[in-house]
Length: 152
Image (tube, rainbow, N blue to C red):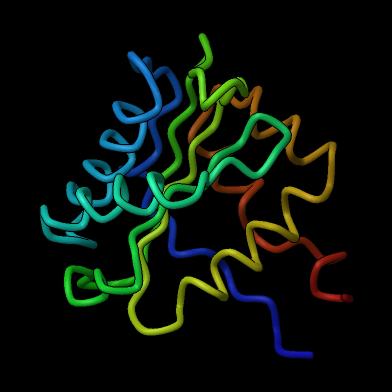
């Protein structure tokens, strides 16, 4: 099995006290965090909203993983992840989301990023810790592969 790689997570793309008026606002904020670290150009945010219109990016455990459509690859400058925590929650088509993990990836990089996130979020303790995190360093630690991940 290939070695588990760390997620491309810039601490400047982590916001732990965000609030949003709804799902679209939360997705825009995730996209703006990716834009702020130079990972995408502004058109990527529209493709994130387009993706959400076609299929919900809610994955369970209070987490959504918004990302752009396949057609948006040219809008991605480098792979990156943004993490926004919404302590007050966001209505996500009837589900309550407290953590949004925005993804931008070139080529097929999103497949690896989604797989890494799924591996992390399948651990209920890590998912809960991510939802409750109040420090950027804690989020970075939680989203890095653990020794147990390496053994899988």
